[in-house]
Image 1 (tube, helix red, strand yellow):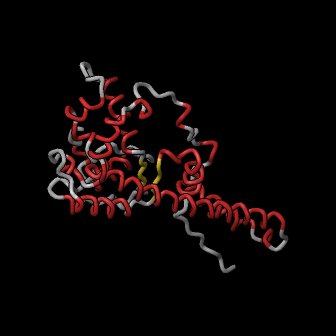
Image 2 (cartoon, rainbow, N blue to C red; image 1 turned 120 degrees about the horizontal axis):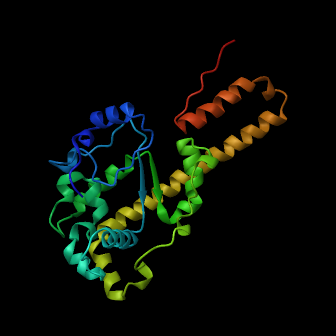
Amino acid sequence: MSSRPPVYSSCLALEQEVMTRSITFLMNENWLLGGRDMPQRVALCNHFLNVVLFRDPIARIISHINYMQAVKSKMPSDVLSFVELAPIITNNYYVRVLLGENTYRRPMMNITEADLSMALHILDTFDIIMVLETLDLQGPIIIRRGFGWEKNKVLSMNSRRNPRQGPSTDHLSDVEKQILRERNELDYRLYRHAAEKAELDYEFFRQVQYISERGKQLVSDSPHWKAFPSLYDNSIHCAQTCGYICHIRLSSS
């Protein structure tokens, strides 16, 4: 990963860029902002809805290796060579990126329990947490109710439809798996925490969907509620526009 262009150097610059270019969705595969000097200064941009997507740490490493092999020449073919060649992507990568550039560039095996504690704190500040391994089940509901995107406007969440290229985790030897687990123990603890939080987010939005569908049925069935069609229409429009960050103002008239 290289350093960012100046426009992505601060939350204010980023906000101005997306507003100027009318960008409504922005993805970051780099370290978080604010940690160039010390991880304590890392913070999310609070004018955005901040969402993070995790996957199993070893599966992520294999995917990263596959990508490097595809775009760069003379890359090694075995996993353990990559562990030595590119330790920055094979050693607690999640903790590194959550704590900013300074921590990301630290020497291998220099990520500590204190770093994990800070990374867990940063993770908890995200608005929505998702996990790739459960995305097929949880993704559609979270995206529809959390983002306010209609189902017919969202691509399929079934990532398994895209065939993988290169080695999968099933082909790793026991020795390779053990080494990767040892080098990414803190990442696995962070990943498990993310999975627990993702389950809570899913359950919350599942209940939101149930209440929404139940409310829609009550409106259609009850003459009393039919007296307020504009309120219901406004709430549907707001949910589509704002996701779950939504306020309906009732008229006194």
